[in-house]
Length: 458
Ligand code: TYD
Ligand code: MG
Image (cartoon, rainbow, N blue to C red):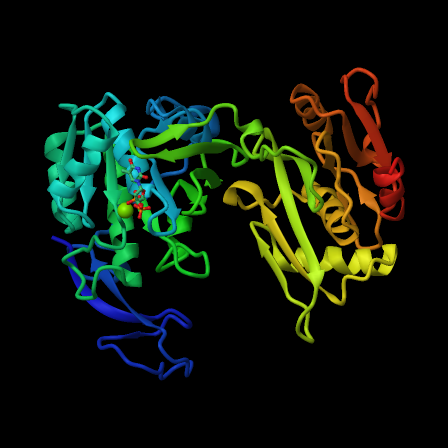
């Protein structure tokens, strides 16, 4: 029998101590000691090693001799989730879904558990059976293939999973489960890490995929250790604004597929609904053209999406003008304002600036820059951008309008949705037949020309 014991290890320098200490006597850092389990294999003379049990090491294998066969994918009945995962969940993989509290992680996975049509073990340490039942009845009719298990001891969970042999396991959430081998409280660094490690070993050994939910801290990290992101095979982020109905599922890491796919959902009273054609969603319907808004032809993952950006520029009441951005990086907004001020001579320094993305989404596609700049100028000058114009280009520090990727897709989508003019970078036209899209393409080289081209007919 292997022997195990507990030690505390300094996460800075690796010194061990049998007891927790506040200050490391070796490197002098404070609060770096975390609890770990170490194991010594049976027989004498073995070394103490990290982890619960020493696994026999693998032997080197020639590449052609490696058989591919057990990376089978299972479709989950949720087309958006499957797409984000790269075509279904891979057998034996460990998937982490992160997101802020209340965004809908439990709803998403319970929905998958109910609708997947395979035997699922849904482990919840957050809600009682009745609460889950109530939620499930909002989502859909009962199924006799979904088992609810309100246990938080990871050894027990694995024990049950071995008996039940489900085809998918959901852990809601990793912060509530704990290993009885450690004394620290659930949610602590060592517990989260140990539980994830045990679940991963179980998943690999049994070839059952395990999806774990992780909460996100205020600064956007998956709570507890970032370390978890290294352990798991795929990391998905579930994001959106709780006050809006749209939710985005984005993959930030995927060992079995690309990370540029996103899934889009709408949250309804009876669960999440997939949005298969998102591009029109984020355009607000309005009767007349209003100043301060411009439409950007962005790409989310590989899907084109037209998003309305709104800016409000008003005279600053206080000495220091306010800048506020929802769904867009505030520092990038400051940069765009500085470029407009310096290169275009627009006086933003005395004005408060507010920026908003429709639908409460977060956009980090650089192609949105030109729409934002146009919305800002439009609000400052109080001239409306016609609602059948849209924009797709990045703005550089010296005011140059830069090319963006997959411009063709953006133009096509804008044309399909009935836009009449799209403003792009003049460096983006290589190999493009500007006539074939059924939409007028206006090319720009510098920010200085934007105003003229945009408002020249007024
Ligand atoms: P939840 O899945 O509990 O969030 P998380 O697990 O990420 O913390 O979702 C919470 C919100 O979703 C809650 O405010 C209610 C709402 N909701 C709906 O709008 N429709 C539904 O069908 C369900 C089940 C929840
Ligand atoms: Mg939850």
